[in-house]
Structures are given as structure tokens and as C-alpha cells.
Length: 491
Image (cartoon, rainbow, N blue to C red; front, top):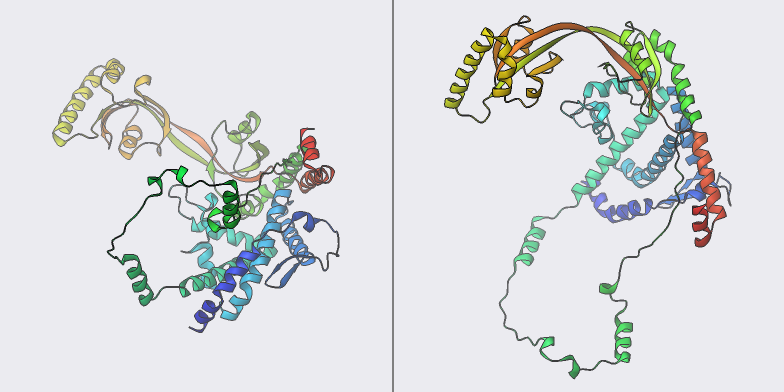
């Protein structure tokens, strides 16, 4: 209760601090060294507690170096900017929340820490990532999350420590916010008073004389009268408008150069031998892939370029292929499993029962039996009967044929008729769609290679980012007036 009392007393101060802390700092002051040295240059202040440029830059550099050393990857310009923004936000939040959290004695125990990572209360930044979701249900994949955190702890210890501190702080701040929210409430007396004021009713008589009941000409208004009224009321709140600004801007797009793309490809190529020799593919993929997720997927012919496609379709288990390009991503893929996949080719006639009552369904069943007898006596009539009777728009144009498909594609009853009956068999399958007269045209097995991939998004390098930043900065220094700005933008 003592904590709640203090929160109530300081809730106004907290709101002011949070609002003040969100004011963005000017980038030109941050990245240039005009005025005081970096050691004492203040780039922000929260509640009288300054944020020094030197400390800010040191934290940014520590995160960049830990990422580079732990993961063996270069930090491109976009990621470096994300790190800078994240560090800034954390330093602001620490000054806003930190003293109050410490005074309240809040803490995060191990069970709670695990709960926000892969338990029942996963943090939104992980819960909402598609890479950590079950593709079928959209729910968090707790096993994938657990593997990710274990891989980070094993392969990137420095980054793991930074991440742990960040998640713990985030949880502490959320707990403190919850305390603040739950300490501000209306008691029963206030609720009754509010209800009474909203529902109070009175009865009264009144007389009104409308302004438009008399002509304006009876009350002439001079320019002097208008001016006096304007001066007397121009600052009234009802006449105030929100300030707005119009501005023009020039964009300097930062995109990966050919050299950036080749450097990423070469970096991925350097992992090829280690990937082939890796005994634990999941840890290796999570530790070296941008997506940080290990998944084994069947390789579909034609997914990659022709040369890579040929290599993957003929590779032995354990072979690593690549790097190869897929969209704006470089990939390095390892064949981890070779499976035999059953496939069937069939044709069918569908008599739909959807939306029908039992009496109608009984009639449709009898018709299916009749059609079955006809096609068993004379298979040459099958295509003709498809055209006349089948209610499957997806196959009528093909004579009722479904080309090669595996066991996982169709509904169970249709699958049984297609795979568990011999080639040439004609049977009836009852599904949720209706009655199918199914003829098995062929069955086969094919080899399916299942691969795990390391991916690297093609991003601009720090050098490219800095080059474009310099161009933007030079532009701002050269064209300082509106006229010059427009002229420079049109060059």
C-alpha cells in the first residue's frame, strides 16, 4: 500500500517526465562535434539527469561490436540505425522509470523471465514475429522460441547478456506501469456522484427570441465594430487552431550496391564448409541466419535458378548448395533428409451433397452406385459422365483428372481411395463434399529433398550508409534557402 500511495503522489510527475522524454533529439547535433567535446556534450536530459554523447556512443558501439563478434556478421547501416534508436529509447526509459522501479523494489525472477520468452506471457516483439509462429494456427511456437534463446545463449554470450538485461528492464517497466494504472481508480462515492450528475433532470419554462426574427438592416455593423470585436475575441480558445507546417524534402535512398551484395555472398560462402561439417544443424542455422529460425522444408523444383535447382534436386544428404539468390536474399541450403513421397494420379466424378437434406442425399447415393456400375462396364464413358454429372469445377475441364499429388493434399476419404486401392480400381469415396466415383490412373514414388537454409538479406553496408548520409549532409549544407533547396533537388 505504501508503494501505491507513492505512485499516486507522483503520477502527475511521471506523466510529465514521460512526455518530456519523448522529444526527439536533433541528429545534426548528435553526429557532429561542434561546441563541447564528446566527453561532456549533452544530447538529452530527463528530469535533470543528462544523457552524454560519450556514454551514448559507447553503448551503441558495444552493441554493434557484440553483434559482429558473436554472430560473425557485419552490421549494415539500417541495423546500425536501429541499434542507435533502441539504445536512445532505453537510456530515456531508464531515467524515467529506473529510480521509481528501484524504489518500489520490483524484480523479475527466473520463472517470470522464462514466461515472457517462451511461456504463457510471451513479449509482443517475439509473439508477433511470423518466424516464431505456428504457420497453421498463428499461435506462438514455444519450441522455436526456446531453441532461439538457447542458440543465442550458446553462440552469442555477449549479445545474450545485452538481450537479457533489455528484456528484464522491459518487464520491470511494464510491471511499474501496471501499478500506476491500477492505483488510479474511481471509488463508489465518485461513481455515484458521476452517475447523478449525468442523469440529473430539471423541468423549466423559457421564452426565446430568435436572432433571425428581425432583419439585419435594423442593426448596422461598422468596420470599426468588426475590428473591435475581432481584437477582443481573437485569442478566445474557440478560435484557436492547431499549428501546422508545410515542408518539402529530398530522399536519399540507401540501397545495397553491387559490392555490398557480393560481400554478403562471399561472407555466406565462407560458412559453407562449416555448415557441411556441422553436427547440430539447428544451432548453426539459428546462429548464422538473419531469420534466426531453423526449419526443414521440402525443396520444390523450380524454386531457385536452373543451375542451383539441378544441384539441389540431385544432392546427397549433407551436401550444402549455394550461396544462391532468391529475391533480395542470399541463401545457403543443406540437404538434411531424403524422403520417399507417394503420389497418385486419379480422375473422379463428384456428386455434391452440400446443403442437401437426408432424402436428397439418399437419392444422390443411389445415383453414385448407378454411375459406378456404368464406368466399371465401360471405362470409355468416364469422361463423358464427368462432363454430364460432375460438380467439381476444378477438374471438369480436365476430364475429372487430378494430376500427381501426395497423401497430404486431399481429404482422408479421397486419399484412401487414391492410395490404398490398386491402379485401375474404381470405387466410391464419401467425403464432406459428396460422393466421388474415383478411378486410380497411376501411383508412384518420388525422391523429396528436405533442406535447411541460412539466409542473409541483401542490405546496404555501413560504408554505403555513410556515403549516402554524407551526400544528404552535404546537400543540407549547400542548399540552405528554400529557393536553393528546390534548385538542388531538381539537379
